[in-house]
Length: 181
Image 1 (cartoon, rainbow, N blue to C red):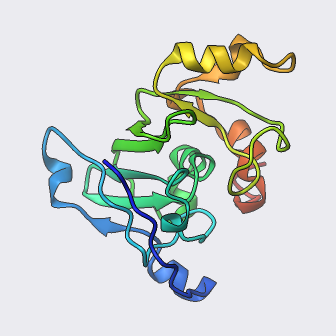
Image 2: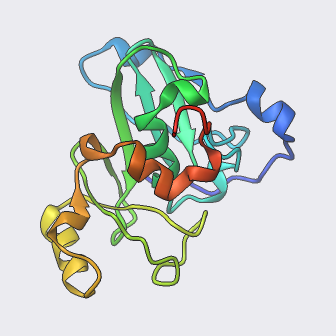
């Protein structure tokens, strides 16, 4: 599915919380949940940037109650995944999540993806300056890691392995210090 670039709408931080990127998705209760086009008037649930402005990086997920949430980058998605309550997420489980493959830029299933914990902000030009890199195939993630001495097999993880420590490395400035200490 190709997601096109959309024009940014000027939103302040005050109005961003009102449009925190939550959209109702009546398909979420079905056995198959699919990604949707990223609305141009939606802000990232974590950082308030406009996900539609980053078509090669944006991400999304949907909760079991049909609440759909959009993100500008995989770093924001994985941070929300770890602590959704800090970003007004519901207590409902996440039933679908999608990110763009780092190499192909295709939209892929984040729940099945392999993520490289890239911590060198100068190695990749991306929004928010630092993001875990999603790959559809674990072998592609491993090939990326093999290129660099500071990365190893432990640098490749699944979304379920993200924890608060990793979220703090990517989006610590956006986390509530009371819950991250």
